[in-house]
Amino acid sequence: MIPISRPVTGSEEIAAMSKVFDSAWLGLGAVTYEFENTVAEYLGARNVIAVNTGTSALHLALSAIGIGPGDEVIVPSLTFAATIQPIISLGATPVFVESRDEDLFIDPDHVRRAITPRTKAVMPVLYCGNPGGIDDVYALAAEHGIRVVEDAAHAFGSQHADGTMVGGKGDLVCFSFDPIKNITTGEGGAVALEDDGLAEELRRQRMLGIDKDTWNRYKNTRSYLYQVISPGYRYHMPNYAAAVGLEQMKRLPGFIARRREIARRYDAAFADLPGIVTMDIDYDRVAPHIYIIRVAADERDGFMMFLKDRDVGTGLHYIANHVQPMFAPYVTEALPRVDRLWQEIVTIPLHCAMSDDDVETVISAIREYAAERVAS
Ligand SMILES: Cc1ncc(COP(=O)(O)O)c(C=O)c1O
Image: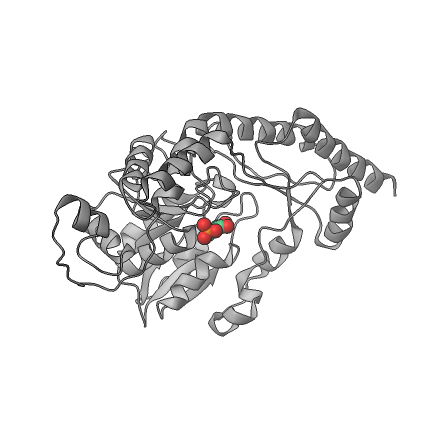
């Protein structure tokens, strides 16, 4: 079975991690800071705060800008539950909105209609790595004085239309480095942002609201005194994960090139296939994390089974959140487009361990499906 995703790591990652274990400083430390600096330089970002998951990055970002009870946060229903849970954890209210057919990006027109005096932030998700209509979201945010927390979990290595890296500009940009993302640190994430004061707040909240982290307390200043001065979590990225991340950064240009090559090959192969709809994404600037196609909702199960029988894995990214039991109390309006979209989407294999033969196997299976569909 060709899986939809899998990480690519090697002896380099193991050697780097082994060095950290030999050093006996496994937690937050010099390797974490080196990883942050490397990522910041790559993105052209002023501040990068590395954390233990992408979900923590989102939670920390929302917490640092003061999201809390009584606040509304506008969010697409079509995303992973990780975008929604941090809003609720902080006592705020998620306001679910529609996504666009062509690229699954949050619908800026619906965002505009959803803004109320209680709206504090909007969370666009850069689906498959695509910044989509993000400029429209920032224009609305500026007009209404609301914050933007980008869920860029899929978008590490993508560029905006003006050539800036995702994370190199914007308000708070959150990445994931979980096992199947564009790079992995095992599990991990990061927040990129411009504002130095807010970055300090994020660093503090990352480490329990303590004014100095352990590395700086013991290794640099030899001062054992500390103060707890803000809310906080224990969300830091440890040295051993950062060591993996530094090796993955070396591989990233090759990863992005290969992902783009596969995505373009799929786009070309499926362009005129009846019953298969591809997404409108520019792979000259997007570093694709997943590749999603759409089929008619009543055909999807059959399509996925057809591919499974040919050893091609498929997935679903994602079930809309407004239909999830946990989030039902927050649903205030019908979302007919997302109701349809989440039943049409299918994720097909895209990762750097795929051979050219694997790519051809996926394409042949989908072509065969389309041909049989037309014939029947
Ligand atoms: C859109 C989206 N947001 C957030 C996350 C959370 O990232 P992590 O798995 O690192 O917590 C993911 C991970 O799958 C994701 O796909």
